Structures are given as C-alpha cells and as structure tokens.
Image 1 (cartoon, rainbow, N blue to C red):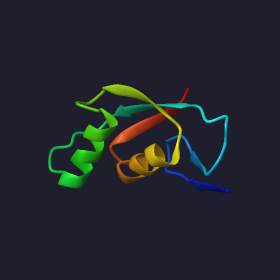
Image 2: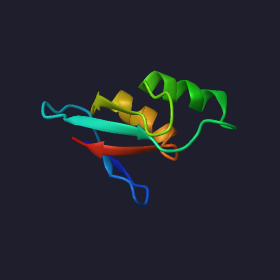
Image 3: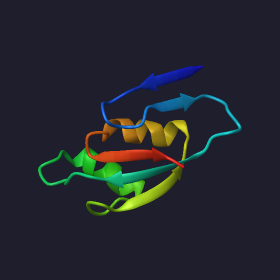
Image 4: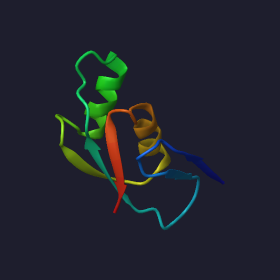
Length: 80
C-alpha cells in the first residue's frame, strides 16, 4: 500500500507499510519555530532539528514520514 502527499517545491514522500528497501531522508529546517504551536516545536526537537539550516538524516519509515507531514511547512526533505 502506497500513500502519497505532495507540497509544491518539496520532494514527494511515499509511505510504505512493509518494504525492505527503505532509504534515508535528509531533513533540513528552513523556517523558524518562533510563533509556532508547542506541538510543532516538539516535533522538530524529536526530529533532532535545532535551528534554521540544520540538517539530520533519518530512515524513511512511517513514523518519520508522519512527523515530517506535521511540520512540512517548516522543513525541506531530500531523499538520499
């Protein structure tokens, strides 16, 4: 089962329920958390993002994809 969502200018992410070939994602914070709700701040912290232009790598799995979907307006995602 493949579920896709898309935002203009950002990589289209695909959620896989079971797939042994899941790759890596590079997540970069591009917008500030100033004035954002607390749950969005907590999601960025859970992703390991601290400040604008900070990047982290994560496995491409449903948990990370769900977190990215919640803060997609604050981050840029690239497939590695």
